Length: 167
Image (tube, rainbow, N blue to C red; front, side, top):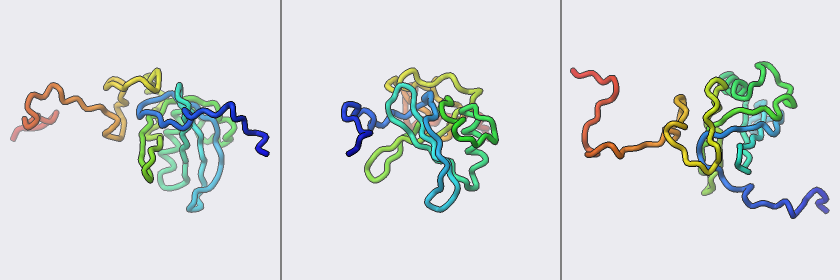
């Protein structure tokens, strides 16, 4: 029974949630399947550099597929129109990981695929704290940017917005 199971390879670190941040990533597997709603979908298993967790990402054929697939293909240097999923395996890129909560548990999610021309500043290690210089300038989520209010003496002080006009 279970001839493919090796108890000596059990590693509880495989279940740890990676901290949010930018990671070098590698496509481990891509499978053509269908969503619960019946839409055509590609399920992609992604490994993160220097972290044992794997992240699953779903490319679903819906109204957002053009921008989602364009960004994904650019990130991993996959030729547009190449849907031979075996060619995708082993491709490397960079992703921004966000942590989401569902039913009381935390799950990593790819929040952003970094375009190839902007890659190169991924964290050296999953345990390395992120600094502002690591933040992607095009990140879509507020939590992608660390906030530092240490230079504000009075938290109630009005701080002008850049480009604010006086009337």
